[in-house]
Figure 1 (spheres, rainbow, N blue to C red):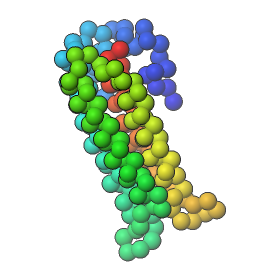
Figure 2 (figure 1 turned 135 degrees about the vertical axis):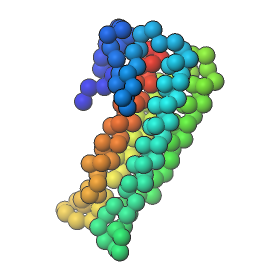
Figure 3 (figure 1 turned 60 degrees about the vertical axis):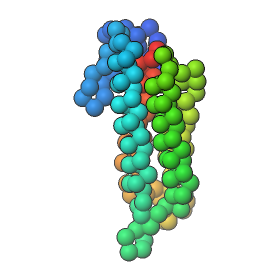
Length: 161
């Protein structure tokens, strides 16, 4: 997978490079600071909503019981999701307060991305069945939702380079 970080910085900053997100095209060159903060706030809000959706979609996602049952690692997964949502909120607040990007901006982004990776890893093969367990039936949707949040984080990071 190619992420924005894999593209050389000078290319990311060029007017020819655009990031597409939710039908909104953001050109990273010539974007005013106020516009970048507004776009980042919207993207971080959407990322929080999507992370919350990731937690919700995995409730009772394993076969069994009357309406399904939670994967064996669900409590840890939900705790990780809540931490990612808190980190996204903290980043929104930090961006709103600062005139530029916060001093620990990259570390905050990295912590969010690591939290998302941890969430997905926690539920890998966490339903009963098979030699080592099975992935929840909607595990693919979880991966897609995670990737959508990662793309939003890549765009937020690019806006402040």
